[in-house]
Length: 305
Image (cartoon, rainbow, N blue to C red; front, side, top):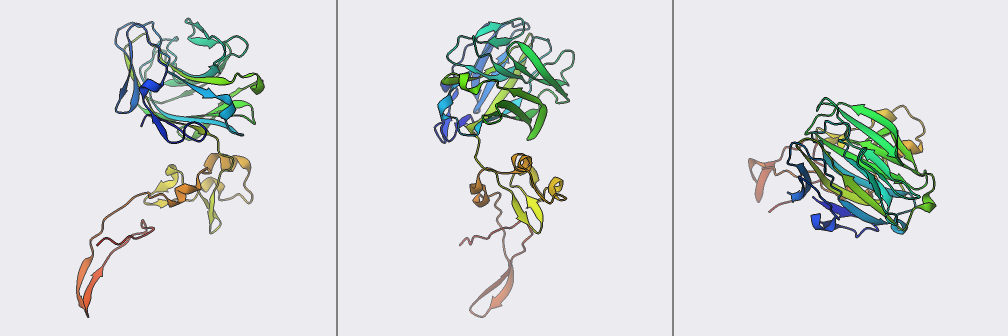
C-alpha cells in the first residue's frame, strides 16, 4: 500500500502521505486511509484545488524511461471543469495554473497531463484525455462507473520521446503525447495529481509504483505456445497461453511490450498455497499409507511435519 519507489528511486521504500508535497484549499481534504491517498470535497460547491506531488530526478531515469503505476478509484465529477489529472512538469519552472481549465503551464516547458475523468451529465461515463501545453490533444470515452477501481500505468518513454497510457493493462493508443525535446527538461520533474470538483466527491489513489522501465521483457514458450506471468493470464489455477500470439511465427517488439514480464524473479514467487490432509489408507509395513489428491493447480510440494 502507499507509494513504492524502485530502482533509482530508493528501492523498496514505502512512503507515507507526509512524503508528498500537498497543497489544499477550501473544503478539500487529503488523508492516508488504510494506506490509500483519499481525496474528498466536503462542500456542495468547492472551487478549490489539491496538488499532491513527488519530485523525480531526471538524471536517475533509466535508458528506456520511467513507469508510474497506480490504482485509481473514480469519484463523482460532473462539471466540464472537473478534471482530475496526473502528469509531469518541469520543477525548475514556476507553474502557472489556469483555473478556468484546470491546466498547468510552465515557462519554456509546458506540462504533459492526462485527465482521468471528465463527466458532464452522467456519473456512468468517464472520458480520458491527453493534453500538452494548454491544448487538449485527444480524448477517449469509456464506460467506467463511479466507484470502480482502474489500474493506470503511465510510461514516460525516453527513446520514443512520448508519454503513453495503459488502462487495466490495455494500451490506449489514442492517448499518446509526444515530448518534443527531452533534453530541454530540467534536472527535476514533478509528478503531480490534481483533483477538482464542484460537487461532493471521494476518490482514492493507491498502490503507486514508480520505477525505471526495464531494458528487456520476457515471454515463456512451451509446446509452441507463448505464456506470460501477468495475473490476467492466470485462470482456473493455471497460466493460460496467450491466444493473440498463437498464429504468429515471429514475435515483434510490441508483443513483448504488451505481454512480456520485466522481472524474471516472478518465476520463483509463490502464487498460492493450500493445505491438504492425506487420506489414511492403513498400515504399510513400518509406516502408514496416505493418499493425497492433487489437482493441476499444484506446481510444487513442501512437506509439513
